Structure formats: C-alpha cells, structure tokens
Amino acid sequence: MKYFIKTFGCQMNVHESEKLAGMLFSLGYSQTDDMNNANVIVFNTCCIRDGVEQKIFGNIGSLKKLKSKNKNLIIAICGCMSQAEGRVDVIKKRFPFVDIIFGTHNIHMFKDYLLSKINCNSNTYDVWEKEKGIFEDVEIKRDNMFSNAWVNINYGCNNFCTYCIVPYVRGRERSRKMEDIENEVKSLISAGYKYITLLGQNVNSYGNDIDDKNVNFANLLQKLSSLDGDFRLKFMTSHPKDLTEDVIKVIANNDKIAKVIHLPIQSGSNSILNAMNRRYTREHYLNLITLIRKYMPYAYISTDIIVGFPGETDDDFMDTYNLINEVKYDGVFAFMFSRRSGTIADKLPDQISEDIKKERIHKLLALSKSITKEKNREIVGQIFNVIAVKDTDDGFEVMTDSGKTMFVKEHLDINKFYNAKVVKMTNNKLFAEIVC
Ligand code: SAH
Ligand code: SF4
Ligand code: F3S
Image (cartoon, rainbow, N blue to C red; front, side):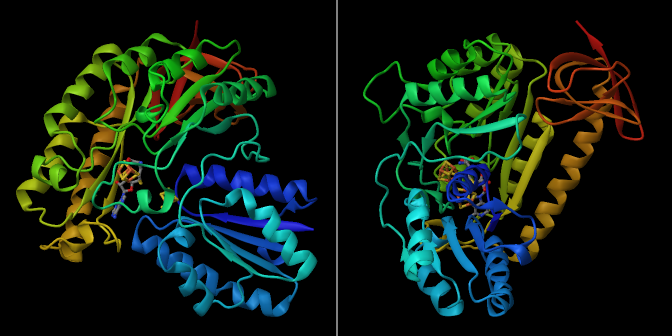
C-alpha cells in the first residue's frame, strides 16, 4: 500500500506533511513519488495568495481521471485552504470524488478519518471552527534524513496583518512547553540531525501565552544551543516588532545558532506599514538591521515584500525600493498583493491594478538580482560555517548555513561541520578552502 503527499505553502505545511506521512507509515503504508501508483493521495494545501489556491484547484481537478481508473483510490485534502471559510463546500461541489477533507486544527485525526474510509467506506468532511490546544505525540516521518529537522515552537498567529489570511486559518497563538521542545530537539540531535529549524509564524512571540516570564524566545534559544552535540539551530519567521536586542545577542554569542535571519519588512513606507498593521516603522526596522550587523557582520539576512498593497503610491513603492537598496539583503522574496476574503485589506479602497503590481515586482526583482551579483563579488575572503555534502567532479561540495553551495579541494567527512574560506568564484561557482 502506497501514499503520495503533495505539499503547497510554507515550511509549516512541509512539516505537517511529515506528520501525515508518519500516520500513514504507522498504518503500514510506504511512500511513492508516482501518483499513479498511490492508494492514498493527500494534498496539503495553502491559501496565502489567490494564485496558489487556483493552482491547487487545478491540481485537485486533475485527480478525477485517476479516481475513475481506480475506484479504491482514497483522496484527502487538508491544510490551510480547506480550513479557509467556505472552501469545504467548494471542494465538495466541484470535486465530489474527494473522500476526506479536514483543516489545520484536526490534522492529528487523519488516521481515524482514513480508517473509517477503509473499514466502513465512509467519507469525512471535518473542519473544526476553532483550534483546540496542542496535540503532542503525533508520529512524524521526517524527510530530508539527517540534514534538517523541523520543530514547531508555536502555532497560530495573533498579529492580524491586514492582508493576511493566516490568523484565520491557523487560529490564535499557542506555544509548546519548553520541555516538550527540548526533549524533541534532544532526540533529534541523538538521531544525528545536523540542522534543527524552529518553526512559528512569529518565533519572537514564543511564550507570550505562557504565564512564566522565563519562557521566551531568547531563553529557548539559549537553552537549546547549550545542548551537547554537533548541530546548528535555525528558526523562522522573526517579526520586526518583537525581535529584541537580547535575542540578537543570543544568536551572536552561540556558535550553534546559524547566523541566518529572515526578517520580513513587507513595505518600506511608514504609511503602508501602518495600513498593513505591522506595528513597526521603517526606522525601527533599519535600527534592527544595524544591530544585527553590529553583532554579526556576516549574518545572512533575507526578507519578504508585498507590492501593490491598496493605496500604495509610486512614492511608497520607491521607499521600499530604496530600503532594499540600502539594506542589501542576501535574499528577497517579493509577492504581488493578493486579495483574501475576510481580511481588512480586501475591503480597502484604492486597490492597485495588476499591471502596476507586475511593473513594481519586476523592478524589485531586477534590483535584488543586481544586489546578489554585487554581494557575490564581495564574498571572496569571507569565512562560513559549512556542512560537508558530497564528493563531486568540482571538488567536495559543502553548504553554508543559508544553503549556499561551495566546493573545496579537501576530502571531508559527510555531514560534519567545517569552516571554509571562499577563495574564488568562477562561472558562478564558489571555491573555498577549509580553515580551522
Ligand atoms: N508569518 C510569517 C509569514 C507569513 S506568509 C511572517 O509574518 O512573515 C509569508 C509571506 O507571504 C508574508 O511574509 C507576505 O510577504 C506574503 N503574504 C501574506 N499574505 C499575502 C497576500 N495577501 N498577498 C501577497 N502576499 C502575501
Ligand atoms: Fe500573517 Fe502577519 Fe501573522 Fe505573519 S505575522 S502570519 S504576515 S498575520
Ligand atoms: Fe503556510 Fe500557506 Fe498556511 S503560507 S500557514 S501553508 S496559508
């Protein structure tokens, strides 16, 4: 018996698909990469932008053929899109061949839904309106054996940025207990995982819902990075309104924490930031960047940008453009504003045309490309923490904490950490040598 899972959306979903896989595995299923061979097909969905949803609808539609060829095929749809208001009815109506639909709050029930389909041929369409705490003890079948393991630290979001659907489909913020996180991380280290990535919509508000002031993100990082073993900690996503100097110092002072910070700004214009309900200013944000660079001159910093938020003028857009040029990010993820029903921004006047959004995003992407080129030229001479990946014709391949690939002459032990100094760049390939 085989399963096929397709994941849309962010790392949160990628990790939840590992939980779905864990449940399937415990029932005796094994994984296949070919949908045609699967007995169970699961789509773990996203609804962050309309384009993603339309693509998913198209993908579900194409399952009809498979189902008509194999009546016993079980099709399950779950994740943020199924959780979003009204989508269950849409899926049931447009795709009556779907057997199981559930949302983000009851993912741990998947096994029960599957068994009732197998044993009683009964379909389940069950989307809980509200979250009900945190469910520990879900089996996990991790992908990416040993190089990276995802660990949830908090679920949900309380921020209600006016463009965003996540708070509506993921519920209110809930933090896991520190000891549950610590135990999970310890077992991952002893299983041999090298990167451990802590996940939350806003990792910086970890612990805000727990009545103990020692339970906070700085202390969690400190505690986890003092565990024994050869590993690196990563985390995402940081929110500029909650990232503190304390946290920046903990990251800077611990070798086991990767110097990789994803800090979404969304817009460089104060009036747009205000309309987005981001609750920080451009100045506050730039101050954080200065602090990060003060403590960690070579930190890898990336960001998310939304262009074409309602009311965004040319001047607002240029504020964003100039900020990107000033910060010189290592990575920029830019998106065109997408109206999400139920959010405040969907109802705002002065919606921006698709043509203007496209023009602005192209301009930003061209800028970010030229910055990347410029930064690559500066990279020669810099020293990075790297992990040994594999032997290749170009030399031994190593990867930096941020995922950049380099090649060294030395023969290395796979999955061990080293420090590597970049010595040259040819044809866009980076060559380095191991230093102590
Ligand atoms: N919790 C994280 C990530 C949220 S979703 C954070 O706060 O940064 C990832 C990104 O999708 C966001 O950072 C934002 O840039 C983008 N996004 C969210 N809603 C969007 C919308 N309605 N239209 C376009 N982009 C959106
Ligand atoms: Fe969405 Fe804002 Fe929450 Fe991020 S912090 S998930 S952008 S509401
Ligand atoms: Fe992630 Fe998409 Fe849900 S970005 S939280 S999978 S809406």
